[in-house]
Amino acid sequence: MGFLVTNAVIAVLALTGVFVGLPSRWLWIDAPTVVLAGLLCLSAPAYILPEAHRLRRVARFTAWLTLLLGLLAVLALGLGAGFLAGVSGELAHGGVIAFLLLTATVVAYLVCYPVLQLWWLSR
Image (cartoon, rainbow, N blue to C red):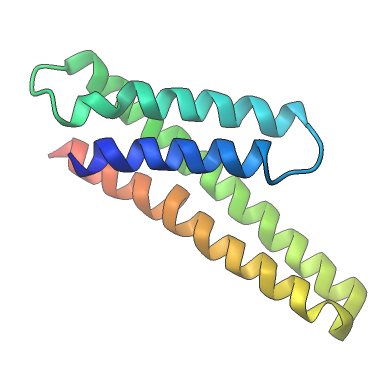
């Protein structure tokens, strides 16, 4: 039941973060977010239905996709924080801290959570 609720919460948070939090639209950000949110909602029942073999495949694929997108997001945020710190120096100290806090959130929800899902699905 926990994975079911958490998948829905992560889907809503991802959609809210992209479509409310970002000031402009980019297809390279919007499309993967919509696909990921849809797959998270589609695969959620796989964790509570014992005979949902096809949904378990979808859940496994969704966990791998979430992990891949999460690692790409961590890479992009790390490069952005490094660039900001390198170009602006001490003037961008607050911005670098904001990047690192966002990176910590992405690591928790888009890296550690899919690893936990993959571990649970492999049992």
